[in-house]
Image (cartoon, rainbow, N blue to C red; front, top):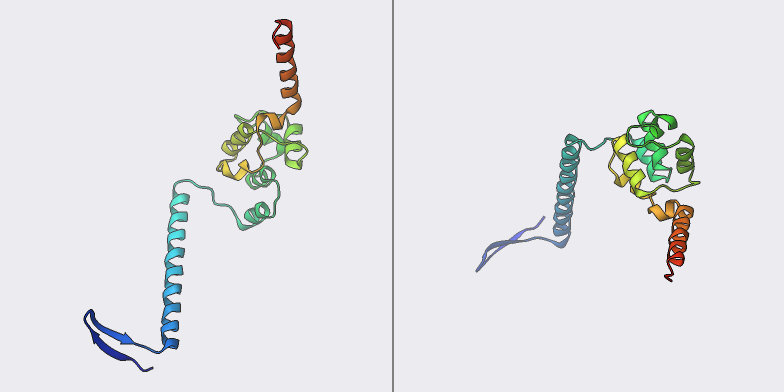
Length: 158
């Protein structure tokens, strides 16, 4: 490699062939990627030390492949549907949980928060399949709307 040195008002500089410059630049990019990886590893270690769940690769793969996160995380914990349905703070029927896991029904945000607490995982892992209270039980909200309309009609309000 031919390197030329030149003195400038800002100090001495090295002049290298373009190919050598590109090779050195690629080393710099690799070093930056290594620093980024080190930051990610440090952050992950801190999160784990702070209590973040560590999930096996097969669990992560199942979640990434779109399997129902309630079912995946329940099975990861080794729980039956009955155990999760009756867990402290959850208290729903096993049939309702079955419907949620199969996709027949959607559960409200509040219920998914309860699942997250019971399963010991961040709410974010379940929030993607949660819906509003109204979306979770439209019949109940339609009935409530009808009751309010009936009350207003009886009172002479429109």
